[in-house]
Image (cartoon, rainbow, N blue to C red; front, top):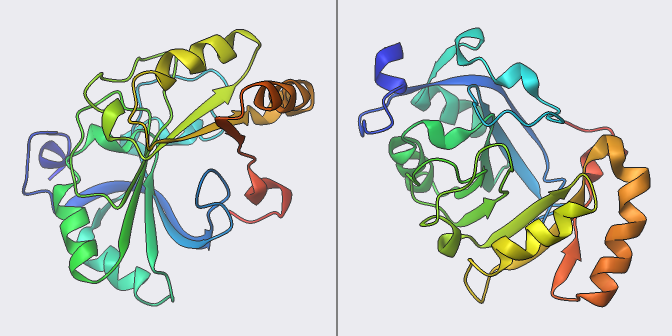
Length: 211
């Protein structure tokens, strides 16, 4: 089964490597504060030096979960939104997962770096490009939300580069890297005041101590 899930072209995926799954509040971006069920997939080769979930990188460390069993767990909660994140979730074909979720009436949200081809059917697509592995050009126009992590001052110019590659209806967010937030947040505030097309995203889940 492992060879099946590691094939991004497969449309018959019935299991995926899941690091963790839980019901909580969305802590970032446009849907911040909304209740959502998170599925964090294992596996990532983007390699962000400041990644706060490096345990997700090695997919082999995480169990392969059957998608239908996973949906049964989600249905034990009042969740209406299911967020697929990682790791880098687009390393896998997510067609089957999103089909099952939408048949059951869930809204499907994806958080991705955009470094792999888009699979699945999504009600909301958040693309957060990373310098360590560039996003594919074809995925950017499909983004509902562009979220740029600000680690240093040069990231503002980098953010503007990708702002020109998304649709006119895309929402723009600047988010301070957590360990550098005290330094970068004041700069982000001033930048947004000067460039009001951008909005501030904070990882509120870390402030209120929820997953």
